[in-house]
Image 1: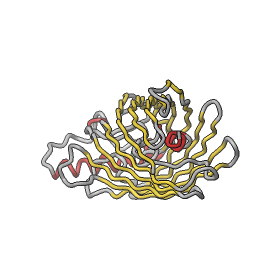
Image 2 (image 1 turned 30 degrees about the vertical axis):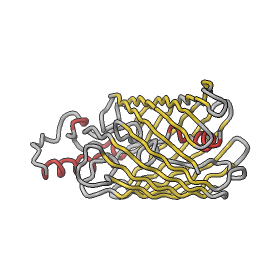
Image 3 (image 1 turned 180 degrees about the horizontal axis):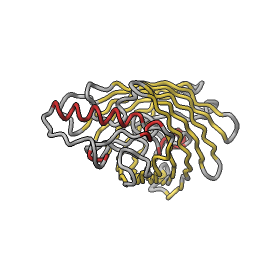
Image 4 (image 1 turned 180 degrees about the vertical axis):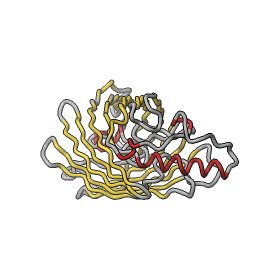
Length: 289
């Protein structure tokens, strides 16, 4: 299945929001010698915005549209638009443009290098809005299992970097006819990094709430409520989350339907909601021309 190969060879089925964790992000196949230029479009619904297994204090269900145009050389260009379903302030809640290159280092090892910029409105509620720029490099080793290592450098108002190590396994569940296939690709990854973005998020959340007339609590208490003391862990490299992903997909030659569930368990060092668990559910449709 051409589209299935395009998506799974780059770990697309377990991708993240405005960076490493969003299922609306489309990346191309790393096998540039066997794939012609193509355009892939995607539509996604998710019950919450996901940033390396973390989430904002408020619920943020969204719908997203994504596009990827890939050249035979492995160079690709991406565009995305997000609409928060509880946001009445405009047609688009955030948008993203990016470019990158994916290529084989050997028969089993691939490298993907990319850069993207996300356009956030003033007082954006996204957890990661302080870091609109993201530079990423990721290695994928595909054998019986698909193993990946990626490093992301996020910057803007603050500077953070994240390291993700994970494994995934695509399993064929059978087919309904002669030209389709049903797959499940369970995956697990661990994320570590810095958390400067979170202190900026808390500061701007308090400003946003004050403009809306929300009664503000003192800067103490549970970080998941939007109140937090400034901590030294922001500048330290800490384990942030353990992520278990279960995407199931119906694939045909040019399109794919997917339903995915992700359980993210945050570490005790995660400032967004230390020690808690987050659940993310998404439904997606992708079509390749």
